[in-house]
Image (cartoon, rainbow, N blue to C red):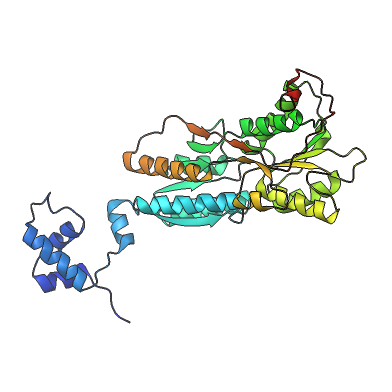
Length: 355
């Protein structure tokens, strides 16, 4: 096995001290007034000998490894996989590498992944947490490891975050369904007691209140952002005696599961039941019935979070403001049926798109 080139090998070839070579290769020539001729001699020798610095040893000396940890709750979810890609690309552009972990929506796996990343001497952590408990994140924060949260955050814990404005997204989507004449709307929610789900449920309920419509709590169902949740809950919803005329799916995967269930029941969107999905994906417009969606700025979320984390690492300053919420956009396609003869009590806004 061929041995790697060391600074001593370069020193033997160019007859310069190891310390001088180290200063040149670490970009400190100007500080130590090393001549351009010597610099070029060393750089040429390093290239000729295929010198590759030991990044771990260098990181231990500088107390920095230029490595970031990124923990996602579900890499199979297109929303999170896109963010992971953006984080890796943008970090690489700024001179950092990424170690990726998937918590599988499991807090224990998440906590173990954090410890693994700390053992690898990461400089900072980007995490889309499971979001139901914060104790292990507090412990990490207290060890002075910079952390930035993506998508899910904790209102009572002072960690910087970048997320979508889930409340307004859900409010606008539900209001649109009501304006189209739907008064019996089901919401297939994601993981309970997480910030995105809590905000989406709040927006769903407030839209009903704004139109003076009493909503049925039994129509808020489910407890996962996954496809299986959408499949099971839609199967149950369409078997009810008084089934909903519309369904708001709390994630892109939930909507896929729900569509599978509807196909098995020979029910069509929007003829038999209308649907809106939270989160737009490239496939949304290519479905048999193009899906009306709440679009999130996933790429911008990933890029902002990465920049904030690297700024925290390199400046050692607190981030202000605490968090950033990016606006969502309702993309209207063909999955919502307009009920022309609907009678909706309340403030009359329901007729706005029909007039």
